[in-house]
Image (tube, rainbow, N blue to C red; front, side, top):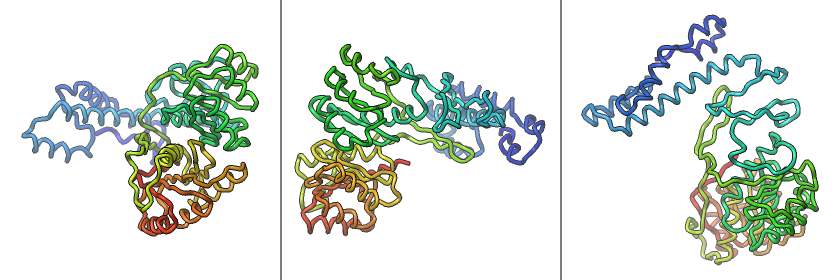
Length: 409
């Protein structure tokens, strides 16, 4: 077992005592054994003793290559965590925002880019990764910390749509989105959903930007535009604003796991890559959604996955009419969405509603129906699902369940 470095730091020991608890030999043995997993079974922690003993009993003292590789992965996770703890200790007071020598833990990624500042001007920040592998920046200022957060949200959102689409994002949430036969129409319809919030937003499309699209988007102020390709004429229009960031998105795979710092450690999870298609929908009401409604339910279900919880999305004819995001009450999220749709003159008659999680009570379904909603998509799983379904049946509303929750915090 490794020297108890983190426990020593937590005890308030002196720097010299802490340094003495940096394990050298143990960590070297773990790494050496893990490297040679083809011939060696590494047991890197006491927590693995019981499972390894059971494995050896089950397989008569033998292990497979896959068994050894699995343990090697755990070993490198332990060594990485141990070294990160040491690195964090040495950062010490250098983490202060006033220290220009501040350095971020890289988690193994060597390439770092210093940003002007973080989420706010008094916070310093770096980007750890390779932006050049993701984008070609054709014009404009360097991307800011907040730009990068929004660009990440935009890229993940548009990636769930195969049809020609245009999205407008603010603070990680879509405030405009539409899918159409051509990008110009997609832009016009997306903007119509909320022309006010679009100001200062991030634009993204999965289609080539031609001159007509460039002239259309050029009528509003926006921070960043992302597309797979631009015509020469389109770039001439877009470059009229010197600070506007113009990005070409490259066809690269995005990470499948997500890491974030929490308290004195980190959380790691698989990214929510599941989309709820028509095949995933289970109709639980007497009324079956029409083919057009199913397409809208699928469209809205993808949008709700990429919005901050609690969230409700209202959509019709492949257009985001409005959404309520980041609310502590699902009813508040719905009422926010309804109010926004009405504010910008969008009719909710025949629209669909998507929810990122189940309805704890039938109140949302009732409010939505009275506003004009005729079809609903939600995960299901509430002990009061039956009450929501009964309300739908009594009022001619169709409801489909997906069985998949899409919380996003």
